[in-house]
Image 1 (cartoon, each protein chain N blue to C red):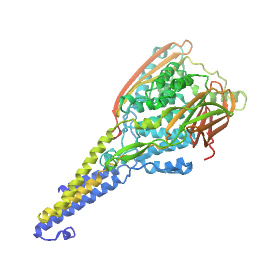
Image 2 (cartoon, rainbow over the protein chains, first blue to last red):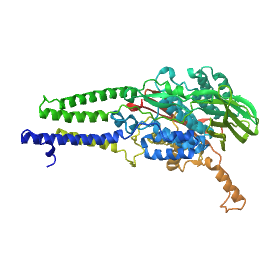
Image 3 (cartoon, each protein chain N blue to C red):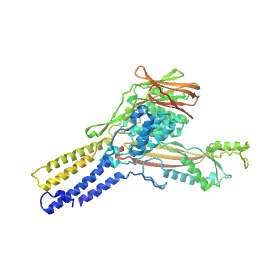
Image 4 (cartoon, chains in turn purple, green):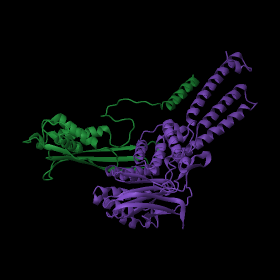
Length: 434
Length: 195
């Protein structure tokens, strides 16, 4: 009864019945379309949560968010595992950090793509997050770093190799394998297992990278220090906030890379209060993120944007016809249904770019290698701006047991603290004054 | 009719988006899984181990040995870009050899030496009972291997060649008395949205 009722506005009873049936079916189609829209468009493309808490030093709050999101947002599980891994490493929970990076890289390296079909039609963020090449590179780099810190060099080697591959396979030839930090750590891993020939080869690779962001950095000097087996202190510091993504262009179809401003430029390292050296940039992560060129995704998004525009224009035309009194009642009704359908399709097509990214990466990574006399020492790290020390940005660890022939590794994040590890020793670097 | 068909198709489409529910199933470890990728998979490990074990059992140094050889397994060195636990190879290889040639070889649990030493000291100290003292075996041979890789990647496409090499080394002379290899090359590509 009800399916015929609304259409009874004139014409012959038979034609009214047919029109009513059509309209009813059309409404069913619209309803079904809306269901699909809900499932696809429901996955809002947004930047990750918990980043503000991380940078505010509210680690437990950030940890709770990341843990919850890993369960409730399976398509972003790798991203939240990376965020949690960064947090755990900053908190000196090295083993927990390793588990997080293993989980994240497992998803990022898999070729299976959950939600890819949905992303072609709907929100790009409905696809499973696997990271951009620079994120895949850094995920493997951090996993390698943690393995290296724990003395698991046999695992660190494939990690750093996978990092080089993730970076080198990312597109434009001239930027392939331009990650000096990857080659440096791969070389040190080979050095640690006694594979000196391979270590030498990778050290040469670190010096030879063509990376404009490292212009002026004395790579040869850094590599010389890194290859010196008498150096038993390796300090790696992360400066600033890493790159983030934002939408640009019509329908927000393009994801662009943004860079945060931050004051720290370098760090001086102290042993028992005596200055021993300054850290040097070995990786510019913003550069790595922003020099990938157009991915295939950009082209798809542009095509989707055109299709979205076309369907919206066709819908507008159909509505014009629906209001055109010179047309028959039946034609106007069909035009109305067509207009509604096209509007639904236009709404369904989302060209918005995916702006999920690993926002707790640092902007730069710097390194220092030095020799410290065996025995217990206090290690201090003081961050500097362009010319002056930055207040409240001093890190220190006391009672660090240095030994000849055994490397002690520090990873410190400016403002956030960090981890210091030598084999069988794990600790947190205190960073007061926040 | 067409509209009904459209409704069915759209409902199916919705079903595709809905089917992200958690599922798990037992699968044959000798067959590829649905995750794809070009890494080292369970079937690679099993194929390599079966090939090596079959060849090693028939090797002259074991099949025609005058006395039962004592073998210590050394960790396999992984020089590929794949982060795997190389114990997967050594454990399976050792177990397969014990299963099929257990009467011909003796394997040493060198990775459990700390526990063995502790127990020996406890027995000799009278802290625990003892059924007789024995000497800790020395190895006649070391069984070990190396994984090497050639990896290429460009615009979402990936090619990985992995070469597996295993050898039996005389623990006195360092002579390689048996060796065999296996290689696998895989190519794959990411979905279009991930390139």
